[in-house]
Image 1 (cartoon, helix red, strand yellow):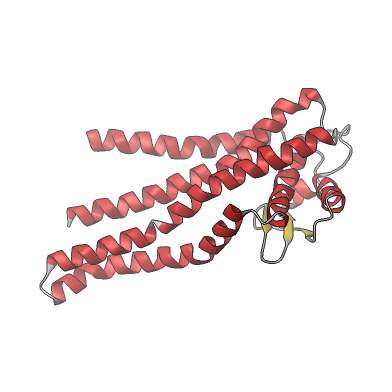
Image 2 (image 1 turned 180 degrees about the horizontal axis):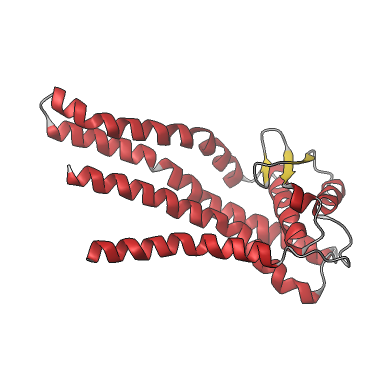
Length: 227
């Protein structure tokens, strides 16, 4: 019963941020004609204003900044949309471009780790799955356990990536995007609270991802201990 209770709490903590992020994004995605431009127009304006050596394009793969190609990518609904969500997301992604332009070390570290994390996660899963076989072939359950533990630690690298992403995302939202929006008077004082919520939601997307990765590692750890 204790295990079920802990699991239920963990699942709640994992899905609650995810639900809240989606709720906030949708809540403030209503079109507002009084806004000076679309998300895409704001992003291009900021790129020009700060003379960032980056390009801007639409994508179906989720809003993000690609430091490898120096590209800010926005989904069509935010690129073409005139809503508080659209301009906040646009400013957030340009915030990452500003971080890159200023050679932010955490952003660089995340980029390096992202390249290898998914590869390590797959490698870790493979190691864990083959550990019992190796233990049986060598007639050493302890060796199989150690190998599986190594695989588990390898899988955990993706959790580390998400944890490193948190300060990077919060910096893009509140140290880059929000001051830019306030200084340029792109939003009114009345819109400041909703925009803050959208920027927080943009940063918290990695909290849900980190918890999901941690749950996956925990699931494998439970299987490993049962063996």
